[in-house]
Image (cartoon, rainbow, N blue to C red; front, side, top):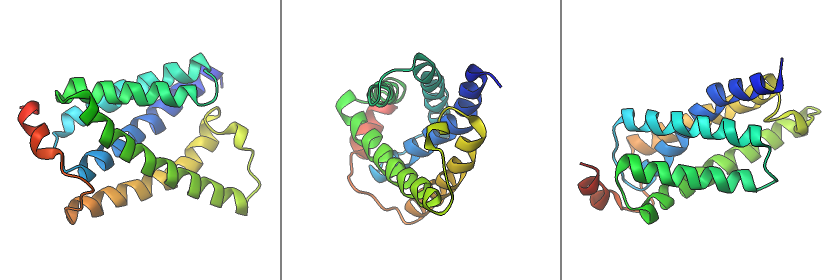
Length: 163
């Protein structure tokens, strides 16, 4: 399978669901209510952005900054909220996702011999290690939403601008 096809599959099956979950985590924890249609739109554009950033092969760390910037910009434009208020849910969701991914992937890597250089380049290993992260993220989103748990309350101000 070609490198570009690997990147496309990773974007569809991992970047897209990851973006959905990061958005839902961040927005839920900031008490921001949003329609799923907007979440899907942001996630789809973010997945295309992830594909382009991966294919551009930017230096270590730069790809993360580019994607965070794109994420914040998309959230701000599509949800019609101020950019500085979009940064908070993006950083919260990304931080939680990063901790979960690091913990789970390194935990699995400690049990099995893993060539971490294949992750984010080869579709199957990336999918295998990504699925447990996404499942735990989904459970976390459901628990947060069911219990109305929030870290900050910027939702009231955002809803006025988002209408």
